[in-house]
Amino acid sequence: MGIEYIYEPFSYGFMVRSLIVAISVGLMLPLLGAYVINRNLGFMGDAIAHASLPALVLGLLIGVSVLIAAIPAAIFIALLIGYLISRSKIGEDTAIGIIFSSFFALGFILLSIFKQITYTVEDLLLGQILGVSLSDVLITLILSVIVLITSLMLFKQFLFVSFDPIGAKVSGLRVKLLDNIFLVVLSLAIIASLQSVGIILVLSMLLTPAAAAKLIMKNFSGAMLIGSVFGIIAAVSGLYLSYYLDFPSGPSMALTATIIFIVAWILRRTINYAI
Image 1 (spheres, helix red, strand yellow):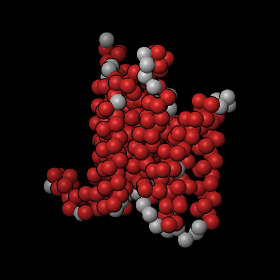
Image 2 (cartoon, helix red, strand yellow; image 1 turned 135 degrees about the vertical axis):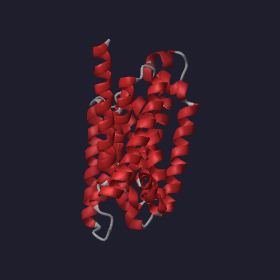
Image 3 (cartoon, rainbow, N blue to C red; image 1 turned 90 degrees about the vertical axis):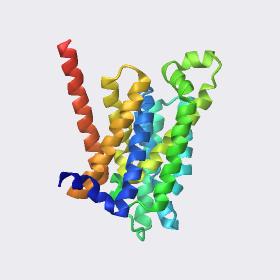
Image 4 (tube, rainbow, N blue to C red; image 1 turned 30 degrees about the vertical axis):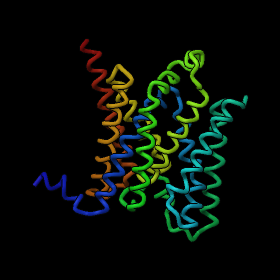
């Protein structure tokens, strides 16, 4: 009887599609989250997600997938923020905050103007993974492959720049180009996750599993791997909560990730105390 609870939801096509997206999101975000935490770019990830709102609204307005509409916008926003940070004297947080708030406000203005859009604000902000279409699944898988291949190919370079950007520049690496590539990859991962966890909660899936892994793993590559495992567990668990308890998918995934972090923190404290 208990086993039926595990496989019974996936007798429905929409749950199979949701599972594929959940695993993709749980794998991608924490993988990049390890770099984001190390480089203190958490606010950057949040800004990319929020600033993509106008593109999502325009995509809904013209009838294309919100993922397709948001991809070029997110890349543009990420590179724009990176440019402002490198060129502006107003400070990193200030530059990100200006882009974040301006584009997010524009998105809500567009929502108020084009009232014919049937997508709810709640779905945009909190995600609705149970409603993903086959085309959404395909786009998510394509983005996931791009993110994973790029991350593997440039692992050593990203790692060097992440821990020692000055040393990387002295050694001859094109640090600015690598930074831009990372921002583009981060944008793609965030956009691929918006329908699952929504604009507001994407930061939770990006950072929380990665932070939990960092608590219990000493080396960086191990933390990336365990973070992705935690991310998949959180995403799939949130999917089950959405199906059986009718909880919203995004908050369910985020809350599960938080529980994993708390368990990892308690485990770390217990081990340190025992030693």
